Amino acid sequence: MRILIIEDEQPASDKLLRLLDAIDPAIEVVDVLRSVEQAINWFLQHPPPELILMDIQLEDGICFEIFEACEIRTPVIFTTAYDTYTLKAFKINSVDYLLKPIIQLELKQALEKFKVFHCRYLDYIRLETVIRHLQPSVKERFLIKIGEHYKSIPTSCISCFYVRERCNFLMTDAGKHYPIDYSLEKIEQLIDSGVFFRVSRNFIVRYPAIRDIIAYSSSRLKIILENWKDQEDILVSRERVNAFKKWIDI
Image 1: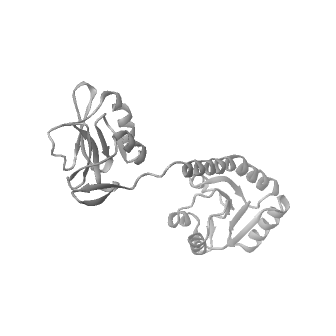
Image 2: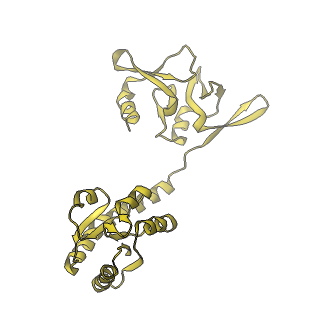
Image 3: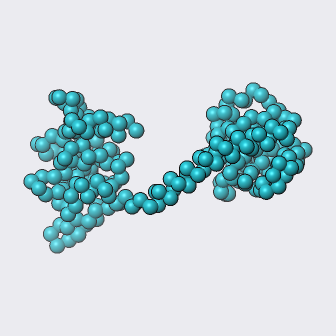
């Protein structure tokens, strides 16, 4: 276990080091920091530890200033002489809140609590990372042909994909229409489902391109896209309305 100690009082940090060594000699204390400024600089230059033991009032301010300056997701065991910050502490990655003088049994119980709850979370994150690497990456651009020329269109510039007379097209944010060789079924597998949604059999739309959503007849929805000037309305099919609403509300 890699632990970072943030404590401005030398006797208190020395005691924490002795307690940790007594509880588990295999624990690695990566550093001992004394101030808000020192902690901010440390987090900007080092990979995060697995756990932080943190005092609240430091020599140059309150520890919560560190979280305002840095994005810190590491769990924290607060070790402090003050009980007035309990509620605020538990809103910030808190595993436990120990009052000084720190007792070995209480610290050991807090470490066990961390292991039970957060090691499961770390296992989940590792599994999620593996699954994400196994999945194919999303397509970032589509190659189109214009006469004798080829052009690469970033997906971030595509407003929609659609079918017209058994041919497949894309429309850019600038309102340009180009034929593509992919079917909508294949495109669905290649693009980011968080950004694109297939609203019907004939249309896939990109979220940033949606200008308006209008209630339509029979519980359907009408999508208004920027620069879509075609006479054909873009409608969300009845069976996809609920899924579309959930997608748009994420």
